[in-house]
Amino acid sequence: MLGRSALLSVAFWIAFVGVLRVAVVPPESCGDADRGSIAEAAVAANGWLKRNQGSDGRYVYIYDHDSDTTSSDYNEVRHAGVTMALYQAAGRFEDAEALGTADAGLAWMSENLFRQDGWTALAPGGGKAKLGSSALMLVALAERRLATGDPQHDDLMRELGRFMVTMQGGDNGFYVAWLPAEGSPDREGSSRFFPGEAFWALTLLHEAFPSEGWDGPARQAADFLTTRRDEVEDVSFPPLADQWTAYGLAEMVEWGLDDHHVDYARRLAGRFGLLIRVESQRQGGSMGTLLRRWDTRASAAGTWVEAMAALWRLSSVDERLADLRPKIKERLICAGGILAEQQVSSDDAANYAQPDLVEGAWFIGGETRMDDQQHALSGLLYTVDALDDRPQREPDAPMTGVTSP
Amino acid sequence: MSEFWQAALGLFAAVAPAGALPAFAVLTRSADVVQRTRLASLIGLVAFVLLTGTAALGDPFLDWFDISPENFQLAAALVMAPLAFRLLWSGESMSLPREGERPLRRVWLTPLTVPLVAGPASLVAALSYGTRFGLEPTLGAAAFVLVLTALAFAAAPRLQQTLGTAGISALGRLTGALLVIVAIEMLVDGVQSV
Image 1 (cartoon, rainbow over the protein chains, first blue to last red):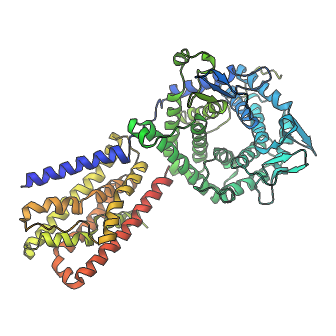
Image 2 (cartoon, each protein chain N blue to C red; image 1 turned 180 degrees about the vertical axis):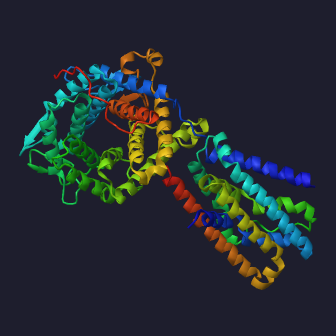
Image 3 (cartoon, rainbow over the protein chains, first blue to last red; image 1 turned 90 degrees about the vertical axis):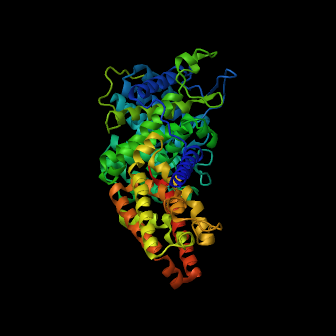
């Protein structure tokens, strides 16, 4: 009789584990999570951005490989972001071609500036000057300065910084845009991500010019982002998965973070960790895909990688987050591996009408958008840093032989 | 709260001695005091082996299945939910057997040990606490909870007499409420963990 009971127990446990495995916790998969694949994916993404720029300095915004068409839409915030990623790659790979491409992108932005009262903002066509596009332009210039050591745009960086400060409100948050036609900030509009972008830009400005007092508005922005932003923006599942804030906090860590900044960084690591865990389950087999049936853009997954890389740097310096360091690194490498696996290889790209628009890109529903490559490239570059246990973000040394445009 | 007490509270709620007591009492009504004490000890011992084995094998098990401990915590919370709601609803871990009396040798392992004491909820709790807090506090907590459970089982008739059916049912429902809290804590921790 003991045999029958034991058999029943065994049958019960086999059924239990089976149901658990299939329906509740599908396996997790991290794709090509090795240094070689991740570094190669970064090089290939950089290649896509370098190949796909128009003569006016703008990049291919959207390409559909099924219909072999590009979109006439454009977005200056994403333009500034792509330029930023190219400068990051230029510095890291000492890639003069990437620098040239980014400089052409910078030239397009420089032709679309709006100036007033000592500040400058990016406002294509004289329209609304969005905080996010100017912030990312400033970040791009800071990246260029780190990559090349070239100070020629320092004054423009300060002017963009003054725009950030002008747009900072009494609660340390930011107006989302300046309306040149009305001569006032847009007091109605709202953006979840522009404040984080402005925050990171201000931290980089302080890093570039440490004696000029940019850390004051940067700290105020950090306080707003870590204590009030989720409430102001009515984020239903806080904290908002905002990699820009992670970048900014990682930059600020050398200045000394307050406890509430560290608490927020911890929660942010949890949020991005959850997103990566769920994505890795979705990658883990057909059942995972079936149970969690949605697609993730590389621009989204790329931001998770960027955020985790920033939080890994932060946790490498601030001992209050040291307990999270191994897990953050594990998730970061996992997400980097997923991105590397999903990128279109040169062999697969050869099957399409325009392989140059396909190779090194990430597609969803047959479509790629330039910021898919931007976020993935930035994230993958910093994943390689984590794999090399290199917690500083800037290149080891400025590129040599840089000629200014 | 220390890791030991957190694991002990979670395992206590998942083992739910008060919810298991009515089924144990019905299935062992023919046993005398000595037999019941021996049976309670045996159940406690085997359940301890199962729970600690599960806790000890947690990491390799999860590795083998490609599941991170954090994602497993989410699953553990879901696995605990049916028992939690059953306890809240009826105050009992399992429905009382309606069939005629069965010899003790036929019931001590199944259903008295598995799944009444070492059921899905308590095993996933042991695995989850083992990977989260380490083996030492989890083993200590499992031993503590199973000693309490064995004592409660051994004293089942006296407890039923003292507390009455309603009293034991109320204790079972309270354990259910505790298990809901434990499951929610596990869920929240699983969501917030990196």
